Image (cartoon, helix red, strand yellow):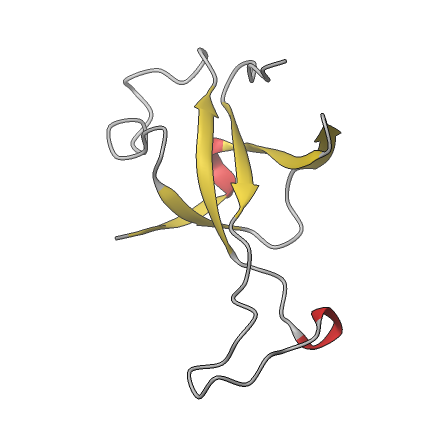
Amino acid sequence: MNLKPLGDRLVIKKIEAQEKTKSGIVLPNSAQEQPLISEVLALGDGITSDDKKKDTIKVGDKVIASKFSGTEVKLDDEDYIIIKLNDVLAIVE
């Protein structure tokens, strides 16, 4: 099943945090920070070319969004977040 966002919304998925530090120490789940970087999976059809971010955001981009924005959805044992385009703070290059 696919999620198709409506209007000016995006579907994103958090990228999992690394389980090891650079020095090779394995971190338990409780010690890991929640990932801030997410991957864009789908764009809503209500995002027009008038939107300033429309030309810069594409499916597959990695973005940083507002921490408490969006609606969390669990579908087929996968966690997704549906956010508004305006809640995207930066694109990670």
